Length: 139
Image 1 (tube, rainbow, N blue to C red):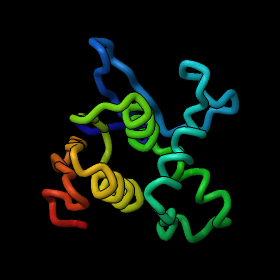
Image 2 (image 1 turned 135 degrees about the vertical axis):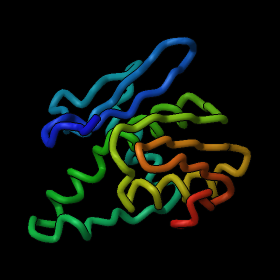
Image 3 (image 1 turned 120 degrees about the vertical axis):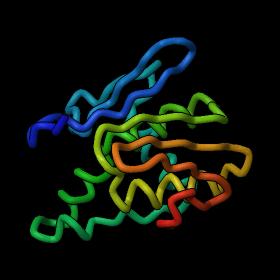
């Protein structure tokens, strides 16, 4: 079935037997997770792996606004949450194709966390990130 144009992008995963879900929207309340802000976790993860945010597909808007859109992608939120929890075998399902920036971040995280296997399943591909590479060869 085709997804509606305005349908939210969702990243879902299971942690300790509970299903979690993040969306692409910026939350002014900045989602509190156990006294940690999800945007702080994302920023920490990006900083730890020296990732530079790619905003090329948003060239018609200001770069600061584009960065805010890209940094709040659902799969980034899910990855930051799981890395903060020390999960080694990450599996995230997302209902839309990963953007290039998310893909590059996942590669960087897997390169810096050599013992981790990170799997992101989107409607077009199952990406398996290990030691800085992805099984789809897009990296």
